[in-house]
Length: 500
Ligand code: BES
Ligand code: ZN
Ligand code: ZN
Image (cartoon, rainbow, N blue to C red; front, side, top):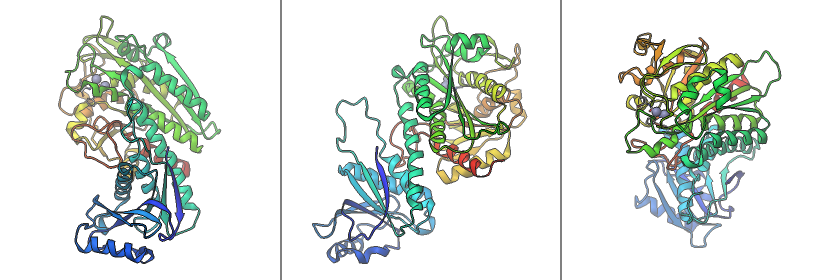
């Protein structure tokens, strides 16, 4: 794991193998340039005058200092136009610097603060660095880059200790994003539902949370027929994972309920998916991974909030014991569902988890996160998650936070008309609503199980991993992205400050 330090330093004194300096387009001056060795300064000046580097967003160039100065190399990083520079820009450019440093094989490097110092800038730069250095290589016998970056220093023009604590908190959160990525990236043979549950149990033990795993037979007895039905086709039995974090002992403080879909592999079941890209359905557990990671972050920060995380985990397989199209299932809350497509399994397991969580914990608000529909990708592409909910305040809060975190989210409307598409001839509702508005009819289905509570559903089908149509980001290496962790943690941190 990489450590990030924040230091007030003059750049002419910083012993480092690589110093990254961000420069704005059309504004290629940097305040601390005078502190550099004159020869190094002249070399940079020439690079700029020759227009080999223009400060274009995301560009970079290396300059060797040839022993003139305490740093071995300098990397100029283009920050784009100054008036367009945001925290997301800082995250991407810091990620870019880290990516290049990794390619160069350095064990340590430094970055000069990109723009005017504030907490948001430090947070974004730390996030960009740690997220970009993530690497899932535990299955590679020959490692691509044997030398790993171990230490990064952000050089700032203040010695206030608050910036180190901002950096530490940011590091803690993105380390949990990387934890979510680690589980998300696990191959389906090494991560059946039982593995999800043992990961959750060890997490709970490490961070002092209450944990419970409900197994298949208990679920049958309790009436969680949706989860049982989907899990029936696999030899790897389903698990319902429950984590409770209590940061306030006041019993009047109702918890937030987070529910995450963890289908460890989605073949589609009897309504089997085409073979192409089916391997990507190992990422169908990413909603559950996000919830696990959020619980870990909240517990390790000891936030003064109460949160319950529920993760229904199943493997959706075709076999002689699978649930079938035509089956009618009586769900945990008593509503009946006609199964018309076994590939719409996510909503079946979320429905039981939501209804159970609500009945058991009477939460103040409910958020579920799931790789639920291909239709969410059709609606919003592979870079924006869909928000659908019954509570404008909660949806707006998430959308606004998402603007800051760079985890883009956009709301789709849950109008009454959509409920007509999921009416069933033989049961209360059916589990598919046809192609039109598929991401919304899936949410309409779920809303049957939230008992009128404030609720938002986040469909991360397009953004949970890098896929066709993903816009490349320096801080998102290939594979699971850990999408949603940073935004949900921010929501709960905000809640801690101003409980309502
Ligand atoms: N896990 C998939 C959704 C998905 C598909 C996520 C592609 C990411 C990429 C989900 O279980 C599913 O198969 N949904 C079906 C629903 C349909 C049968 C109503 C879908 O989207 O096709
Ligand atoms: Zn499916
Ligand atoms: Zn699925």
